[in-house]
Amino acid sequence: SSGINAEYGDEEKVEACVGWTFIPLFLSNGNLVPNKSQAVPLYGGGAFEPNVEIDDTWQSKNTFGRTKKPHISINISSISRFKHNVVSTLPSTILTSTLNIKTVSLFRRVIGEVLLKENESSQNGVKFNPTIALMLQMADQPVLMDLFKRFYTEKTSELRRADKGDPKYMRKHLEDVLKNHIWPVLVGSEPQLSH
Image (tube, rainbow, N blue to C red; front, side, top):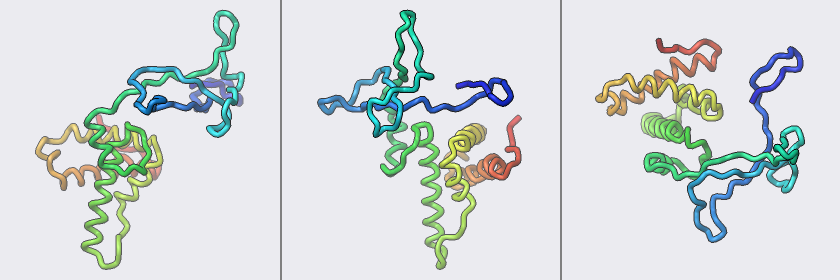
């Protein structure tokens, strides 16, 4: 959304939380809701405060002068077979956007490989691993997750088919993307953009 900066009087992008809503995923008979688009009402207050109206600031009027209740349009659809297979690699306790499940699954596999290798080779427990440290920092920051997906997809598309099928090479490829494009952002320098 956009708003006016009161101090400087210019328009700038701002984030605003208008309200919350409840999206039913099951019908009263226990069946899944059908795949379709629907408009659901927005409420004010919190999820444990039912029937709280949205602030008047966010309400508009129709052509007859009547107040229109704010709502949000959503589209419910089944996930693809590929996403279903990726989700099956994750524990049920992980909550994330479906846009991130492939990345989170990749992170989990790498972390598992590192921990297993360290556990087998070290008598003093797991050592600090910069790859894992970076991945954990990214997991809670949507902007970094989006940045990683962009660069990882871009750089992976440039690889040879044989390299893509080599787990050891892909692990090094992942580390290079993190080192060259995510770490600079975390320390405040510019990431290496492609030409």
